[in-house]
Amino acid sequence: MKIQAADRVRALPPYLFAKIDAMKAEAVARGMDLISFGIGDPDLPTPPHIIQSLKEAVENTEYHQYPSYAGMLKCRAACTDFYQERFGVTLDPQAEAVTLIGSKEGIAHLPLAVINPGDLVLVPDPAYPVYDTATHFVGGEVYRYGLLADDNFLPDLSAIPDEVADRAKMLVVNYPNNPTGGSATLDDYVRMYEYAVRHELIVLSDLAYSEMYFEEPAPPSFLQVPGAMDRTIEFYSLSKTYNMTGWRVAYALGNRDLVAALGKIKTNVDSGVFGAVQEAAITALRGDQQCVADMRDVYRKRRDLLVPALEGLGLAVTPPRATFYIFARLPEGVSSMDYAGRLLNETGVVVTPGVGFGERGEGFIRFALSVSAERIREAVTRLQTFKY
Ligand SMILES: *Cc1c(COP(=O)(O)O)cnc(C)c1O
Image 1 (tube, helix red, strand yellow):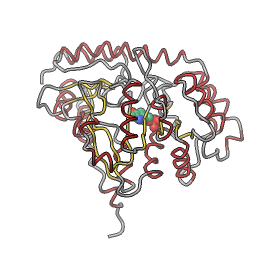
Image 2: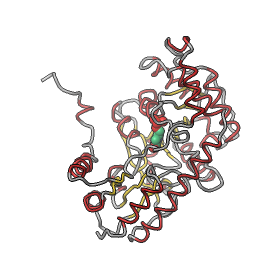
Image 3: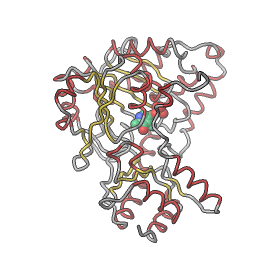
Image 4: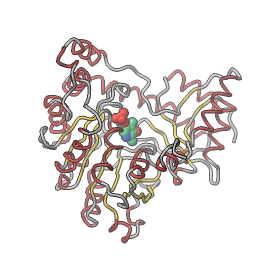
């Protein structure tokens, strides 16, 4: 039988949210008004000055042809200058930065660039699912390490057997963290880096939420760790910071060999980011950052509306210092899928069951704050009537 998908596609885990999606469709058919905290996608529009810069750049006929693979130098420099200013990290835009069609694209392609069949990657559990599937796509193996719920969801590295760590090739870290809302300090990163040095690991740092924070100090970059450039590739996305998830633009930055390897894969797969979108990215990074401060205010207010209501429901929550996720711990022994299903059926409030992010996400549900304050108030009223 040849007319069928490859083994790697058939080996993909079942889509865990299919059941929730079916329940949503049923609830809507019953005429239920859904309030969705399910999707990690900002609900606000892209700031107008960024849209305007795209509109103007669209007229530039140079951009109607294939863009440069690695991204225009001025677009990469906009990000490396941002890194200098925001993190005090010096990067060569020519050799230590590449533009991506969103960081998901880069994260998914990185294993193709650095992982051989049989190589082992240390991936957090729970986590954004791409690290795991992208490793499996290239025949790599994954070891899921736990996060410490009582310690900012930092990696429980000491629980990874030494022989596993020694055999591994790459460590994936994501702070501020999706789905847990956990944050890492620079000292925490130093410990992760020392671990990576001890076991000779590449570090993949996913920094998608660095600007979505509510408390000082602002989240650091892994590249701030002294020496980290020897083994780290960091993914910096404009998606969440500037409400640009639909635009598909991000960067990979850090160790030049790793950046070059990823760039080489990309020259064989895609043809870069539309020039007008790169212009918009430059405007985002170099323009007025008031829009980012406004974004933080919006999510902080939403967080502060929702957290007390969850506590009232008997869920254990730590208000996140960063990200727009609230990872609420369910009472002992409660299935996240069951809880999310009943919540949806009885109140129309949609959340993501933690088990969808990995086994250790079981016992939690994730709320994404991509809902207006008004609708959060409505959700809170409904939550007050809910009894599991
Ligand atoms: C949203 C998100 C991204 C960003 O994805 P883009 O492809 O840049 O839009 C990356 N990592 C995590 C953990 C995310 O939640």
